[in-house]
Each structure stands twice: as C-alpha cells, then as structure tokens.
Length: 155
Length: 227
Image 1: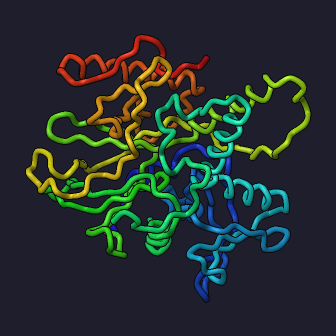
Image 2: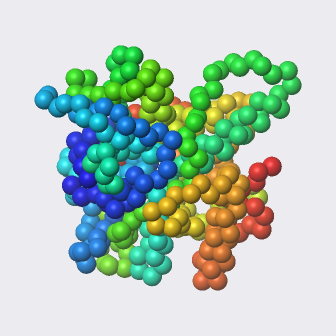
C-alpha cells in the first residue's frame, strides 16, 4: 500500500504540545515494552526510537478507543479488537490523563461532533444556521442526524 | 516509517461519514500515465483503490500540512474539507450567541465540549500526484460516476452567502494560499487573519475567472460576513 511518506515525515516534525517519552507496547502477543518518543500531531500519533529523527511508525487516531488501563497506563484499541491494544506507560497519573484526553479530542470524528453541536446550538439561540455563510449547510456529513453511514451506499 | 495498513483499511471501510468519494484519475511521480481509481476522502486522509467494491487499498494520501497546487491547464483538482478553523469559528459564534441572551449568565443548559485542538491553519493539501476528473482532457469515458457532490443550493445568491464559484465548479473549490516553508509549521494567526489572507487569493482568482468568461457570482464585500 502506497502512502506519501515525505508528507508524513514532515508532519511529524511539526511542533506539538503532546510529546513525551513513554513506554510503548505493540498489540501483538510477544510485543514488549520499549521506550519511545511519542508525539501527537493533529490526528496522528507518531512514535520515534529515542534519538532518531525519522519516526519508526505512525497511528491514525480515528475509529479507535482510548482507555485508562490503570493509574499510569493507557491503551489504544483499533479494529474493534478489544484484545489487541497498543499500551502506553506514563510517568504519572496526571500525564496519563492528559494523554487520554488529548487523544480523544484529536480525531476528526470528535471535531465533527463539536461542529454539529455548535451549529445546533447557534441555530437554537439565534435562529440562524452558521454554516449558511460557507455554503455547506446541506452537506450530509454536517447534519444533526448524521451518524455512521453504510459504506458504498451510492455505488 | 511504518504505517498500519489494517487500521487504515478498517477506517476506510467502516461506517463513519465520508466527506467525498468517486472516481478520479491519478498520475504519480514515476508513472506518466493516468490511472483511474476509486477515491474516498475521510477526515484528512484520501484513500484510493482500484474499484469501489474492492477491499484492499492501493494507497493513501495524507492531506495534512503540504502545499497545494492548482493546475489550470489540463489538470485541476480541488477538495474541500472542514478544518478546526471552521469549528473554532462556530465556537466563537456560539459563545457570542449565549452572551447575547439576557439573563443567561452562569447557567449552562448543556455541557460545552471542550475543544482544545492546537491552533491549526486552514488546511492545504499535500499532493505529489495530480488528480483529475475522468471525462476531461485525456478522453476517458465520461459515463463514469462523477464525484458525489452535495446538492447545489437553489437559493439565489445573496449578499451574505459567498457563492462565488460557477455552478459547474460549485462543489469543486480550489484551496490555495500561503504555504509554510518546507518542514516548518508556524501558526499563522487567528481565523480572521487567515480569512483575510485567503480572501485575497480568492478574490484574485475570481477576477481571473471572470476575465475568462466563466460564470461567477461576485461580491464586493467580505467573503464571509463577520457581522
């Protein structure tokens, strides 16, 4: 599968407030905890081997579940496979909670829900639809009732 | 750099809302001919595969943080996807609307979700490939499904509504603008500043398009009325 690695590497260099060295363990059986520099940029979670410039890998934080595992450990699960999780060990409870909150807010899905919320509230409070000024008020993805849609609906 | 194909495939196939989908022809850097692929835009990732009912992805393009190139000659592409700038603007409007209501001071009828995304520019698109609609200059069959576009509003363009694009391109909006220097990312500024910057580019484009005889609804004032 091809992907635009250059752009991703460039993205991994953007400043981020969520960057720390954490203990990271992959989802497969037999994966062990390794220290990695973990960096959150928009909805991508990059992880670097310490002292390496280029990320070892990246996770797209959409359709994932973030959970607190214990006081200093959080996990991210993808693919609806609850048992296969990435685990991250933090240095403190506080740091752990910060990461969990940041990752939850990082996804586009979260952003879309906010957009719909604000749109609905503004309309309720003012009688105006704030998306009209952008000409995007009719788009399905911004409708209040828009939830998951079946894939390939129109194909 | 590793990227997990299974995670991306799952995200593409799952039932989350699709921002845009359809067939496009893509030309990469190495291959000089166009290949028709089924594209799905979700969030800030563009997925493509050979056919719409294939499961496997041929590739993904991460649309974050790269410069966009509007190619006017035979190739043109445009995407529109919303960004944190849009949500931040709505958040601001919401706060103002709440303030405007008399007696509505400390009481909150609903919990406001706390949007603390890092300030982000109006997204520009990174593409090392060229994309075009099938059925244009290269002579591909025009019976193919065009991009699914949201219905074009039948409301007459009014002063408050920036319906700037000709109907043909109503849902095809070039997103261009100042691009960050390679490898750097600086916060450009508030939404108003961004809007001014991009507004100048857009107005320039409008005058160019008007000159070429395209049907364009122009307006003299601000593209978006901040009230």
